Length: 224
Image 1 (tube, rainbow, N blue to C red):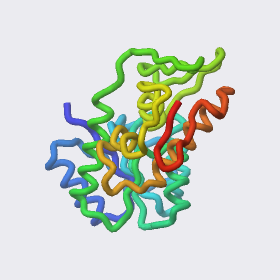
Image 2 (image 1 turned 90 degrees about the vertical axis):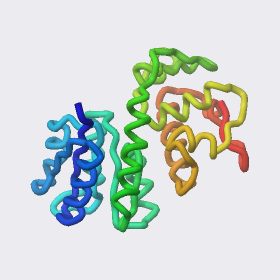
Image 3 (image 1 turned 180 degrees about the horizontal axis):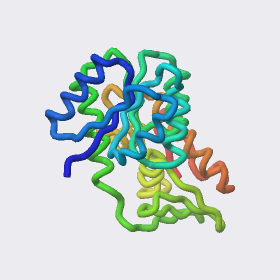
Image 4 (image 1 turned 60 degrees about the horizontal axis):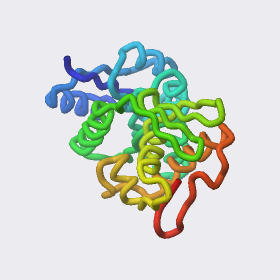
């Protein structure tokens, strides 16, 4: 069965061009063309493998849609925007977007982003438990636990923590972590990794994990 991509984009020409390209690449495509205030519900009803979400929509806010999607699903989300504002990117990543692409973009480049994200998703995670300093990472359930408390992790939080816990006590470079997240560190804004690490720290903190569990080695990378 073909993987399904759901597009939430109000630019008709761009949406049609991208939908055509995705169909040529073998994907099934669903689109939201109006009623964007209900876009999250319509997208989840379509049961997609990936959602491509425009930030600026008539009568709706892409950030709010992203938040609504992430509250109900772990489906991969790629955020599109014509804004180069660092605030918009940080907000999107904090709300749970897995990737962020700035307009104008070449449809083939966006297709590559979608395919890379789906490859990471399709690889899945084995039913495996990792433990370090009382912190338990459940790769199969995408959860982290500490002293009887448990929290769900986003896909990026999971991969960062997994990468660090593979070699506890060893500094992992930012480049290596970015490759684990996005299969490359080329053309990735360095700030995007910082946003994801800070989000992971917040999740760990909510469980009462000591602040020194995940440390930053300035100019080197991160370690647990």
